[in-house]
Length: 236
Image (tube, rainbow, N blue to C red; front, side):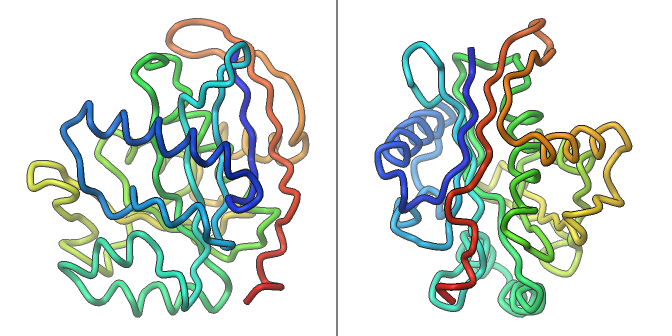
């Protein structure tokens, strides 16, 4: 039913266009029309990697996320967003960048597939799984309330060095966002044991078909998480 595909943004412009359209449609449904992370310049950024979820029969992209690798010429989405209220974000990202860091951004899920657990569960796992190919020392994110718990279960922790102990009102004053960080994306010491085993299993089998179980029962997923161009450092 679903196909997960990982790729570098500049290598797959058509998939990026489908991502942009699907993400924009979801934001409009929630009344959000202006979000820093929805700026579409990322599709031309050589330091952005994407995971999309497609319907196998139609090719429609119904869910996705991006990993932006920190680079002086390409500020992270959370740097642009958080700096509006806290300039300490720049120093924080610079410190994490010493070992290579990236941000999970733009996570969205179409209402048409809500209830399967695709976005908040499977997609976050897939995003973490591909980090081993990118050789990042840490992973950052700015998450909504509904994705905080599943993110913590997968090995993130709240980054309290910015905002109000890590929290912000973003992208609207009635929505709370929390800054989180994964300080060891390889060994996942903060992750729940079950989540750690699942993510490590995905890394050992990046291309496979698997029956997943969610709130709506069983469904088939085809995973293709091998990155064709993972060596972002050659462009630094």
